[in-house]
Image 1: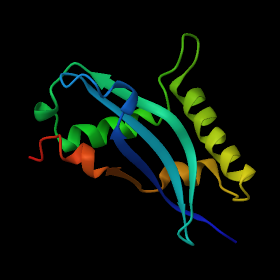
Image 2: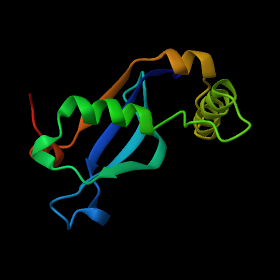
Image 3: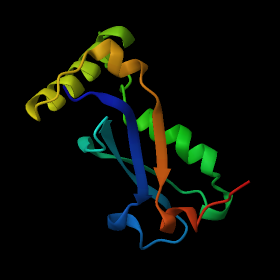
Length: 128
């Protein structure tokens, strides 16, 4: 049986908003990496932007923000963090199930989560 071994968020320049050099705009795609090397995209509609300069943006900031924007989201009024987190992890388990991979939401939540920056994004940011 195939298993998820870790989560990975790929981060790149957001091509839709890349025309303004004064604006940091990033897209993020969350994937599950399986024990056979296969990747399953779980979320491909995430990202963020700011009016900061690329040269003032550190790799660590991008990695931290990437993990945040792929969820779980902040609760809406009347929801708890626990409810939103449970729904988030169940959604990811459902996506995996639709692709033939069984997963447990608690186990998925505990997996290592790597963030991989594209070369073109890495070339714009501060490395130290």
